[in-house]
Image (cartoon, rainbow over all chains, first blue to last red):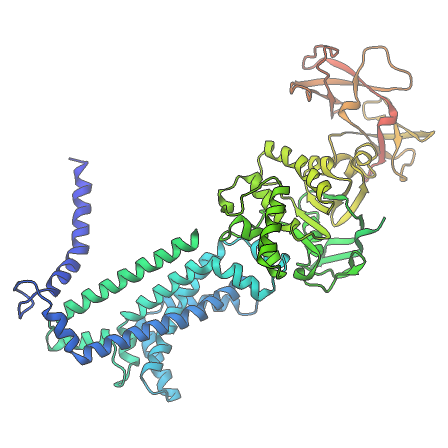
Length: 256
Length: 362
């Protein structure tokens, strides 16, 4: 009895987590007109999804935004982490603390202050404002991931490279980057996911010219959700699984 | 003989504390030079100055006659074996060794040949494609050495590279390192806090304390004729007996120990004055357990046995004289009497083997 109790409990937990996802995937292949009854297997909602210009457009916008936000924040974040790790400078503690402030402050606060800032400087709300906002909240995650990797790093490795005749740039390219690669990858993926499903900040700083997926779906909820969303959800799920496997594959390869 | 490394008046300060305090040294080509000192004596700082990772506040570093002060580490004819070896983790053994050659733009074919050659020389033929993580501690050590030696540096710096190895392997690598140094003919500058490592391998040893060299000498001289009380206490085991200086005769100092016995040792420092405190250093192996008969000229004192420690050839007796601990070697050839705790013994020595320094605090 006591042996079975934990197993049953665990099974229930997993059911709670995964059943909604399984239901979503199964219902994305539903032929029925409504989302609540089963009408046989088919790709009806995938067709309807791809016919929905606005939806597909929003999806591409979102992917492009997430891709650029993740890349920009990884580059800036990695450089910040290296600076924080390697150098002593005035305001280092402050910079370190500010990262946590951004991470810990409620999203709504970040959203309002960014909006106020953009209006103040007269920036038109659209792709650029979204990119700046997303880079802002992705940045601390990248910095912290890379810093964690660097903290376990043997300080004599860069020195050994210098000693063997490498310039600072060559040392960074051949020794430092390979070591922090997994952290860069993890930071990038984290940024990508954060950006892709952000609603709160995006609501405030997006403009009419650049619609993104989470906001599109959110606005659809009010007029009634079509089962297209299931198809979209399934596609995103497959996409993120592929990304995850890709990153694992790169990590294993880099370890060898 | 021309020198590979010549330094004059090197100073490196951290705040008000000088980690390296006016050090001068001259290392002839092809020698094994050790810098021996307790942790915190500044030896690592000194090595980093030589490698170029740090700059001296004063003084000059010359390598084969070239002034090196403003030359960055990647342009110095110096390579370093790091304490934790610092092998590049994402690279194979061959890539690690080829790293420096690649930086020098040595063509691939030539590179491959030289990597294979140096691996052969350090006793690891054919391991180019292995991951350093798969190798044993001793093998990794050799890879780290090969990575430097393949560049044929003027000077090889070694920062306590044996520290991470277990005792048995360390003993083995000591001998190995010495052989490799002879084989390559490269000048080695080796820093360590382990006096046995320094003694076994070196041609010259510099004993360092608080940023300065106490003595620079071949190992035998360091052991037989320590120049300062610190060297006498740090290099090898030594007994220290404190007393009052009674007289100096024919380069022999006579001391009255605290228990009243009069003993003799060679004068080792210039600050001896009759009536002042002095310290006599005598090695445990120079002390003989004597009966009533005393060889002529020998000094002797009474001691009370505390305990005996059996350790094969290193067996010894711990005793005390006037509250001061004394250790003597116990020969295991049957010549030593059976000793029990509390029994009285007589320890004697040839005064020529003992050294007397003035005590710092009167």
